[in-house]
Image 1 (tube, one colour):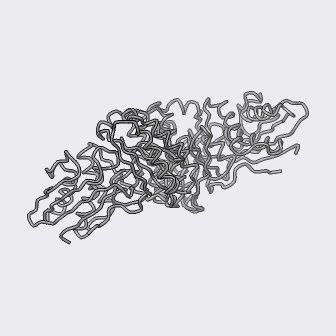
Image 2 (tube, chains in turn red, brown; image 1 turned 30 degrees about the vertical axis):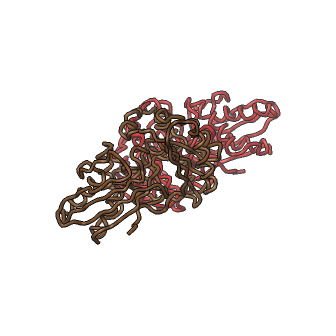
Length: 308
Length: 308
C-alpha cells in the first residue's frame, strides 16, 4: 500500500464522572487524512486545510510526531507525506489532536502492513497527545482508533476495555466557539481531592460502567455526575448551566463537558431524543453573539475508517 | 410472627479498589440472632454470647439502635428482646457490627410484617453502623441484607446495584486476631488524595466492575489494586506483605484488606483454588504467636436467612 485516505471521528472523552478513563467516538464531525509513502525517509506535512495555527513542521505536528515515532521504531524504512483536512476544530474538546494522532497511528500501521496491534497503536497515538498537552492520555485516541465505548482502566500496563452499551445510546454535542486549551483546562483543576469527593466519583464511575453493561438507563442517568472537572471547567463555558438545564429538561440522561471543553455533550436514549436535546442545547445560544456547531450521533461502533 | 431466629453472614467490604462502595457476604462465619416480640414497648438485649465487650444497653448496642429506630418510626407498636450469638469477632474487618445491624433490620422487618423494602432496611442498618463508627456506610450492611456482590454507587439517593459476577468466584479470608477499631482505621487514612491517585483508583474500580460483569478474570485480577486504604492500613497488620505474597503465589486473583482489617481476603477462581490460597495465607502465621481463623467460601448469593 502506497497511499491511504482515512476518516477519523471526533470523540467525547471523560464522559462526566469518568475523568481521564473513558471515551467514545461520534459519527460526525471528523477529519480526513491522506498518507502517502515516499522513498526519502522523511516525514512531511504537505497541507493542512480547515483549521488555522496547526504546525506544518512534522516535529511539532501531532500526526507528524506519531508518524515519526512509528517509522523510527522500524528504522525509517520509508518516508510519509501527510495531508490533513480538519473537520474537527482545534480546542473544541471533542478530540481534535486525538483524531490527528489516532488517524496517523492507524494509517501508518496500514502502510507498515499492520505491524502493530490496538494497544501499541494507542501507545504511539498517546505520544502525539503528549506532544501537545504534556500529558499521556488515551481517552480520545483509544476510542478514535478502536470505536465503541472504551474504558482505559489502567495505564501501566495499558488496559483497554471495550464496554458493552445499549444499542440505542445516542449523543448530542453542542460546541460553542470559545477557545479553551487542553493545557489550560488541566491547570485549573485542583491537584488534590478530598477522600469524600473521590469516593463519590468512583461510586458514580462504578454505577456508570454497571449501567452501561446492564443497559440500565436509570442507573446511567443517576451516575452522570462529575465532582472533579465540571465544577471548575464549566466556569470557562459561557451559558453552561443553561445548556445543561435545557438538555436535561429535553430528556437527556445526563449532560457534561466533553474532554476539557468547551464542547458539551449529553447522552440520550435514541435518535429522536438526541435530536430534541441538541435543539434544546442550541436554544441556550440563540441570543448570544458566539458561533457554534451541534451534532446528534449514535455512539460510533467504528473508529478510524478507510475512505480510499 | 412473635419470634424469629436468623443467621447473618460476615461480609468482605471495600474489595480492594472499591473503598466504601462495594461488598459481598461469605457463607461463614456468621452471627445467630433471636428476636422476640414483647408487649411492653421496650427494646432489651437479653444475652450476648461469643464475644466480650458488646454493650447490653440497647441504646449503645448496634442491634438495639437499629431495632429502636425501626420501632420508633412505627410508633413503638410493641417491644423486642434480642439475644445475640456472635460468630463474627468484633474488630475483625469482616462486618461484625454490620451483621448485628443488618440482622436486626431484617428480623425486625419480619416482626413488622415486611413493612420495609431493601433500601429502607439498608438505611436503618446504616444507623447502627453510624452509632459505632461515626460514619454512615452501607458496604457491609447492604451485602449482609441482600446477598451477592453489591455496589453502593451513591448514598444520595441511596443506589444499590446487584452486580453480576462469575458463578465460580470464591473468596479466602485470613483473620489474624489483632484488634483494629474501625474508627482508628478511618483516622489513619489520608483525608486528601492527589488527582493522579484518584484517577488510578477509579480506573481500577471501573475495571473491576467491568471484569465482574463480563466474567473476565484477567481484568478482575488487574483491577485489584488499592492506592487509598491498603498502603496505610496494611501497616497495622503484622506480616501483611507475606500473607498477600503467599496468596498471589498460590494463584489468587487479588488480595487486599477486608473492611478496615485486620482480616485479609483474596478473590479466587473456584473452590479448589480458594482452599489452596487459604492454606498459603495460613503459612504466613505458622511461626507467629498470634491466633487466627481462616475461611474459604463462595461469594454468598444469600444474605440474612431464617433459621427458625
